[in-house]
Image (cartoon, rainbow, N blue to C red; front, side, top):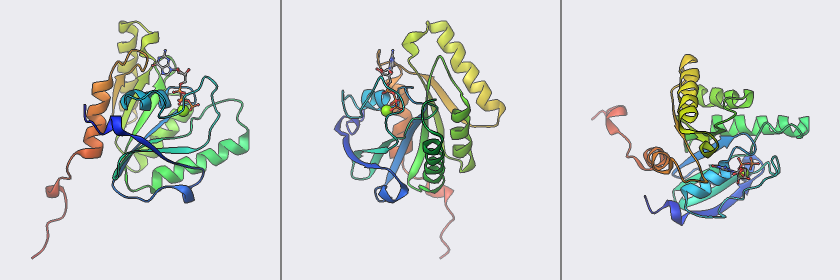
Length: 210
Ligand SMILES: Nc1nc2c(ncn2[C@@H]2O[C@H](COP(=O)(O)OP(=O)(O)OP(=O)(O)O)[C@@H](O)[C@H]2O)c(=O)[nH]1
Ligand SMILES: [Mg+2]
């Protein structure tokens, strides 16, 4: 494991786009329904118990939480969605904040979409997929709480989700994950390493004219 993850520290919380930290380096955001296990996944991937606050009560916080791996690399815990008891005005505000963050944040290098393996691809999940697709942001799906299903049904769900995304022409990778059992940690680290730390490919850029 890349040692930067275990060195992660809370950086800041933002309630609006004005509160975002400066756009230095790269970041990867974790989005998902309330209670899907985003904060738990961040803690598991960083080998820390209480880096991101987890809760049995969904829909508590509407903040974007930033965790610094080092000066130039961040993991971002986005506010959860889909919680029925949230008032309409809060929901609308959430939509605007997410859309603007996802569309405008240039240092954002990829989106990890976290879904409970027993309830994948809700309407709001598709909205996140759509926003990522619009700016061609790489997308990786963590199907969390995989410990709640037997291996066969879990793998079936992985295939179903991959094919549902493929049918909409969305390029994405999909994996089972469990914070409880620490399942899928290496696969998720590979994706993060690639998005956050892989070198740019200079050949993909326009050649300099001498
Ligand atoms: N069995 C099991 N439970 C999990 C797993 N991951 C998270 N949970 C539980 O699910 C609940 C919600 O987890 P959180 O990580 O707080 O979920 P969240 O997506 O950050 O929720 P919000 O911050 O409200 O959006 C907690 O009670 C966790 O203990 C997992 O892999 N397996
Ligand atoms: Mg959370």
